[in-house]
Length: 424
View 1 (cartoon, rainbow, N blue to C red):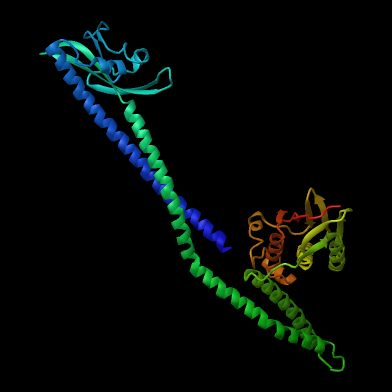
View 2 (view 1 turned 90 degrees about the vertical axis):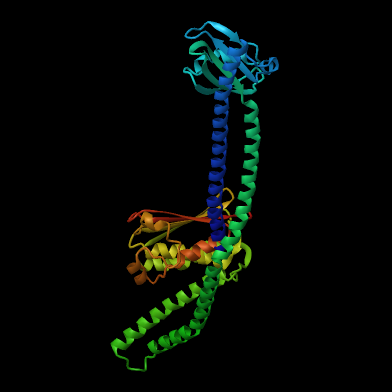
């Protein structure tokens, strides 16, 4: 139980820490990208002004031939207010035709900067920052200048840095998981200690109660059977009530001891090959008398082939008794059907009744200790809300599963699946 709680807390702690790491890393990536793009845009504005001034002074754009060949920096110049080409350094670049094909995505206004992405024939990604401005000679516009700057190298550098950030994030998340596991262990330590003391108290108290309850039960039965004493009718009724309540308390103590031993790790099974056919017939033969007393029909469906299971015979008998006894308790009329059949390599035990049923909101809690769906009725029937938790414990000890299907006033079906070890 505590291992599951520790694991759950570790997952929660790790999830919160991971979320914080992801938020921080994402923020850093966005901030770095925005800062880099802002810086490059500002440099592009300064570059295009500088290139315009150089063109007015010398009549040529000072972009080197090497820059054009590798596509690092490019210039494209038109006559003012027209599409008449004055200078074209784009066509000679490695991705010149793709850039010209994206003409509609170039800046449409002066002093504007945009960026475009494209891929070459080798599927390499190219990222270009494009700026536009007017070249002025005095107050007269000489040309409309487009400048292109390749940012692909920056992209691949940033991609490598982002990969390192991701790897570092995973490392810190793993470290956070370890720290979370340690903190989860520290946080549940007081609960574990408290539960241990409570478990020891329940075990000790239950053990100490067994002897006086047994003595009281024997005394009550002896007094009730004493025909020589002239007891009043009130005394006889009181003794009968005492005997019934003592029996109920004995059942409660036995259930508490069973749970306490399991919690303490002392509830080991006495494993053996159990012929479930024999166990089924013997247990149902005993419980059929309870059904007859309530006017119920107990229908049995047992597989013809032998059902051999590796388990604890007494525990399996207890499991079957709990499920059938519950079905009888919560049925006022009709039939209780108990079946034990084979499905593939599993033993499937199904107990169906036509009783009061269980509300949907109660189904998830019926396996909790001391939880009772109908407290008044359960009290009258002698239940404490421990039967189904013990049944679930027995099923889990035998590596099986237990499910319930029910609806209010529509009866209930409990389905247990246990692994078969030998088949004939």
